[in-house]
Image (cartoon, rainbow, N blue to C red; front, side):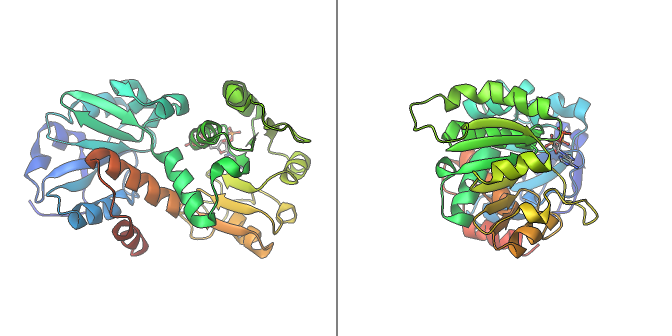
Length: 309
Ligand code: ATR
């Protein structure tokens, strides 16, 4: 069989062991439903080639009820591991034999490593965002006052936990359904109990996605991070009124599908520094590579492959 990056495989291909007879043999994958849109094969295959590894990375369509069997099939199929994406990150955490602290706290696994017959789970989304912010804005998350939109979603939770574990200056969890953000604040509170100088505002807060509350909080914010899916479609309504955005802010939008989201356009017009989720995608991928191969990822090769898309 030949190398075809756009091919979408099924779980039956994995369990039948046929993916090992591809050229080069499939040793890594992304499991998703849907999975067609995934950009991961593009940069992971570029990385594998640049590193001189005789392996390819494939897309496998995995339905939710197939996930445990698909993960369990990895050792027998000769795979080194896999990435999992929507909607499998929580299911992967429930299936792996062991997961690291951050994956457990964020309730999600995006990277699985096969170690003999055991499956080890990691989540590179939060650490990927950390690296992306350092690269885009030359600052560390731990030094920032963060306002996180969509804190109640899966992506939002992973980012909130990363911010908390980094001990960022301040974290405001914003969610349309404020109760979800409140629950998360209760969980993360232990990370924010310290002897640090207490300013005029709380270091950890939950607020509703509502204009007046946002305006008050933005006065004490360095970076706005969007973890909602709003902005994927050009027809989406604005997440924040343009009038709330100011030049002193950094705005990071984890959305990258639509080029520049409305949020980033408005932020740029206000003079704010902006970046979209492509850098997070790149760095979470590079971190997965590092976990699988225990060596630095060829980052610039991966970046060029992603840009070439
Ligand atoms: P995932 O878990 O994959 O991140 P999700 O569960 O759909 O995706 O969560 C998306 C996040 O975007 C949630 O925080 C959601 O808010 P609710 O918890 O109140 O549903 C948020 N979200 C979705 N549409 C939104 C909108 N129009 N305005 C503000 N927040 C929105």
